[in-house]
Image 1 (cartoon, rainbow, N blue to C red):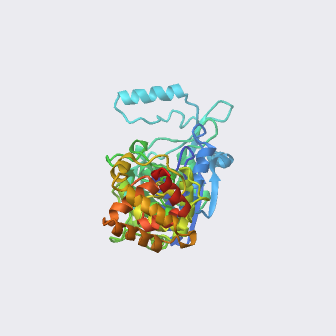
Image 2: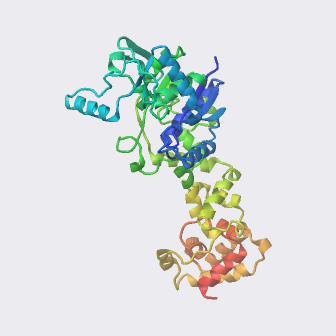
Length: 464
């Protein structure tokens, strides 16, 4: 048997990190088992589904590297198939047409709630054998009224529910569009899905879906219902907690492998290991190792991982995202030092690529004013003589001599001549060059800044 998993998002918004984790688990299991990973777009919510959201989901999946073997398959392209299956279920007595009005159903629900009963369809049309005469109808599943649905969930273990707890759910709406529970069953059977991995908010749907599968004479897949991701307040992660979309973290300068590494550990573990390569994830991952308990999203832990990946990545691998971040800040990357050299100098100093770009803009864009506190503390009557000596010494060397070793020797020589500590001359110089007090070591900063830009900024400070 070929293992086949699927990820089936609804294109009603961005790809949430919870959805991304589900996609990752599906993808990892398929890859581990030498199987196939299917991408299905469940776009039957016609009011909320948009092309923009669909594109955003596909873009996020590509960025994460979760490439699919089949798809994307769109449910709205399969309406005739759902109608065909529904008709077959009616013919074999496992479904029926229902013409109950919305008003009747709402009144029924209100009465049941008032009587402290569980809201459910009362089966009025169940045995009427209503035919298709042009009157609007929905198709309902004829849920067995006795018996038990049992299955073993890969995460939650044995699950059992009495059919008497279930009502006759709608399969096809009056507009011919399937409900979630029907569309997903038809799709999973048609696409030979062997393992359904999804959030545990769908656990209650599974007995209903198994009933439909059995009526269709299909093979019930194995289910793994994974726990929700929580915010810091213990509630389900949502917009109220801040950033929750994959794109947002990408735009902040979080690396895709860092996000994947973080997400895989939200509910799964392999001993005490924290850092996983993609291949290690594939090798070690198993559905049975997923934790039942919900995990809380922790931005600080994600940033710690991201910093690890920034520090350990080859600069050339970070070049494209670094350039993108710099351009967002108005930096001209054609008029500054080589990007890879700046990355090398800043790798130990940034938790995100956005932060690295912010800390590097002075190499690619002139600042308007120095930081006021930095200027007040470092550009004083006491430090100006040293800056003037530096200006003269730097002006006396050529562009070809503009190397960190040479520049470092000049700064030390002038500090010794003035009988001051290196910091008393290096820090004022740093403020002149960058506008603030944070940069790589001064000799590296000078080399990256270049002779022309260094002299220009010194001249501006000294009023020359």
